Image (tube, rainbow, N blue to C red; front, side, top):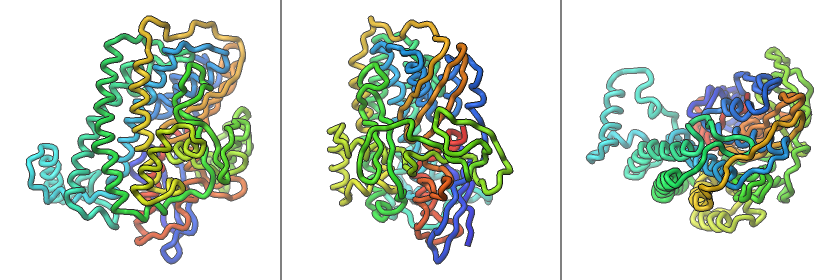
Length: 503
């Protein structure tokens, strides 16, 4: 039985999932990116200093990560020395953006997979947000519309949280999270100029000159975000985990893990980072080798050669290519499929013992849930790893604000070289992000991006091995093959961004 569950809603971009189901088990899955954009083509021949601005338009949710990765790549190409303030402000902008994105992903994009929205109809209290939500849902249901109360209803068939108080509390936090996300975005904009698409992130630092008002305003906003993380976000994730313990085993990808590391401690882009970089393959950690990344296109809608390294990448669209089923390429690391994202970021750091706080938090929550670190490769594992990341990042960016010196420079002064090339690697909230730039005659001669969702939502590679999301779906038992709430929960746990994947 073949079932197309796309377009999948509550994610960024256009993703369809084609499944084959036999005896209620998914025996095959195809992740289908359904559009083409071509940013590498757009960038060729342009001024290199356009890159960190243009690449932000790859995504309106995580634009700062693209600006940071592009800036790192250019700093390497130009051999720049970045002032400490510049790197700190990069961290403050990107860190606040991660906090916003984690809350968005859980509450607006995933929580409705588990929360029983109809519980709001039983609400008898006086909380204004909940009263408005209850009355609106009632009116929508009575209206006879074909899709009432979107995005809350209609919903897929399946089990939801049964405790009315937990459901109503989670819906309250859903509404509150929207205001908290605004605070995280305002914090990013203090040093980034605006959200989305920062104007101040630059190779060599930040064009914003910090002052005490900036610092105190940022601190106030992040403290509010941090309080919500501890008081609302983490308890809600634990409530979902308690109600759906089977999802510690569901949605496991069948490959390795890759993280490029996040938030450098020093001004150099290759400084030690708050989250350590590394490749976790067959239970062993090794340093990241960018030359070990190749992109297959056997099942991608491109006629350009397959298996090219990042610095060799080309882009020739071929919408009618036989056997191809996605506009997403299939990157592989040392020939292996890897998952990137929150679980990879935490597991890679945990296995190296890089950050004691991460190890402490993993062990703490694993103990509460009765799981081991290996269970972080799962639907619930990805949600928990985002929460752990949020705790660590909130503390770090608050500490970073204390290291700003308002009297010191924030931006390097330099002249563009005639030629050069460089890699820039960071972690977007969705995972490992790599930019490569080659400059020739003062213009961009070649640009290549390998983006988190390109890794996770890739089609099969040249050896017919499925991508991370595809492998996580295969073998899953679904109660209602026509709807597959289980598959939707798995897809949402990866937080796909198809606009990034088909950049």
